[in-house]
Amino acid sequence: MQHLRLGVNIDHVATVRNARGSAYPDPVRAAKLAEEAGADGITAHLREDRRHITDDDIERLVAALTVPLNFEMAATDEMQRIALRHRPHAVCIVPEKREERTTEGGLEVAREENRLAHFIAPLAEAGCRVSIFIAADAAQIEAAARIGAAVVELHTGAYCDFHAEEKFAERDAELARLREMSAFAHSLGLEVHAGHGLTYDTVAPVAAFPEVRELNIGHFLIGEAIFTGLKPAIAEMRRLMDAARAGT
Image 1 (cartoon, helix red, strand yellow):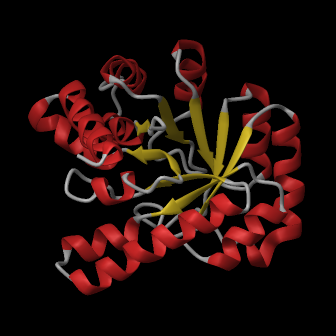
Image 2 (cartoon, rainbow, N blue to C red; image 1 turned 180 degrees about the vertical axis):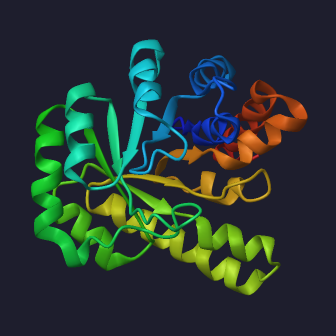
């Protein structure tokens, strides 16, 4: 059985910190606790407006982590310069809009193939594994493969939203699409990750997809940590993922 990696996104520890303009809670401390709890990697999104993670957070994460850092970023010249300076293990290119509360959908790769191919080339040459955050759509997956991405991360938000809204037929259809597109991406030689909105109630079916190598989960875990603590919240997610992977 292939190990399914868990990437823990610590953005919203920084959201809480920034709400008061204080030094705490510290997202780097959260990242170290996540390591201890069994996270295989840490994800941090440096947004253009710096609404949660800051440049200093990235500096400190790079210095402190012993597990890989997945640096989420928009496809801008500024973010490319920052990534090339730090050379994190992975960079995940995501769409970004100033007015959105969170990332609302996948990147439009098919319409921007030429620009994105040129954008990611220096990152790959610097040794970063380039991931593209996209909807579970064949055209976007094919475009990601053509531009030279090593990884696609499939957006699970619609599946999770349908589950929360008890729209079970739509949920099941979206889950089937995620399953089919995971297999399709794998067939093209792409490593497959998934994430956005996953909870204890929704993680198992996605974790069971044999082609998926990594799940990136953040907001739910930070919220659950308020009630149980961060390490127990992560440990329970790890347990559910492993059980689903083992088919138990």
